[in-house]
Figure 1: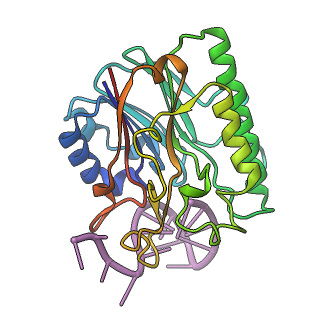
Figure 2 (figure 1 turned 30 degrees about the horizontal axis):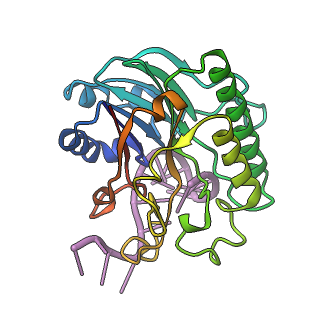
Length: 262
DNA sequence: ATGGTGGTTGTACCA
């Protein structure tokens, strides 16, 4: 079984790329982020034609998450217990959707962007991650053998080797100690980065800014992860970061991350 | 080669 996670930066703009990716990679389940589409705008039929069921949660032109599966899609959950809201009045954003796919609970997560050190969005991001760690801890407490994949764009580079320049990010988000502590909180709850052992850094990234030739200059960040519960991590036999998908015209600024399960 | 922001929306906001 093969699970992918990919921030596509608009499913409507990227549907041709997503289609081609699914067709050439034998993906069973894909967690998608930044769909930027409401339910009535989502290209469900394009997935159906390839044999995938889709569930999606999108409220407006921002955020948006989806899961496509060709191995079953059950027990869909939008958001998780304790997930913080944003705005006035406080409202849940479209940043989390989960479903059971062939025995694996797959989550598609779009962790808030903190924008800048000191920005209220950063506090929101940290709250969101703390709530996720707490929810995840609860899921494993209820069932220690649960197979759970927390897939998505985490907007955090957990270690210095996960960014092209420590100096560049010294006073920006994604690398600050509170963010790294919050990410580690999810790891400590029992969810492991199963890709790192197959692709050790430095220089291994999943995101490259659109501006200033970041990709050809290899100026990226590793911020997209599939964190797996112990029972699922034990099934992992390989992993791939598909840099090919960042190349050429019409690419997302993120590459897909794929894990292979026995 | 991988190439100098892009997407959605509406003339700004988000990343």
